[in-house]
Length: 257
Image 1: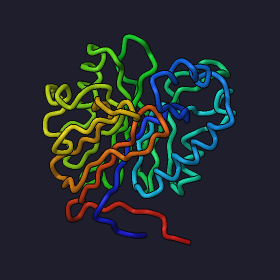
Image 2: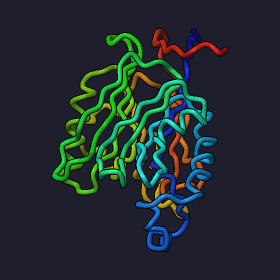
Image 3: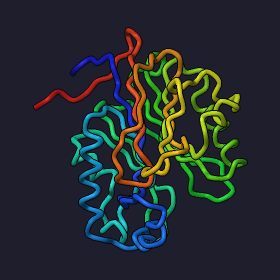
């Protein structure tokens, strides 16, 4: 059992393993959202290498094992390839055997509890993962989310997520929130959460101009560094943050060997 005082965080919308490096690919490669293709496996291996240096990883737009992914749970596969001992997949929307839209959390630390929640939305299929590490009073709450595109649903979802975080002293919200940092700051429900000093564009990956992916933390976590990781393996770029944990906040990981 190892005590750590720093956390390396990453959130990544992996676009179900589709490598996209041009707007035209949305049309020429649209069939890859529905059918299997050989290079998806190779691209997942590249993504696994990106994830390997981090401690907690939030994944969006994954597939939980259907025809299009060759019946591979992509969260489980990436956990195995990147060496994460703990992982959790939430299926947000099932389309028969054709697709199982999902999201996930990878962790090097043993969670005390992981639960799934559905987010309020006009169209069902948006969800979040809530993981707790350590004792509830002094532990860490991690929320992984992928929000809707329309502003009304986003406002309701942010209100809901804010109620989940409540007055927790040590909490992290990360994911593809589909809105800008300015929009996030306007929601009273997220009062007290903060990100890096400047918005970091992460979309589209080949020429990023929009900050859609976010990592927000409570003031008790000291932000050391934030960056967009420059690897074009999806239509989003990964967003990373390094934080220092306060004295006394302990996370445990499996001993090596």
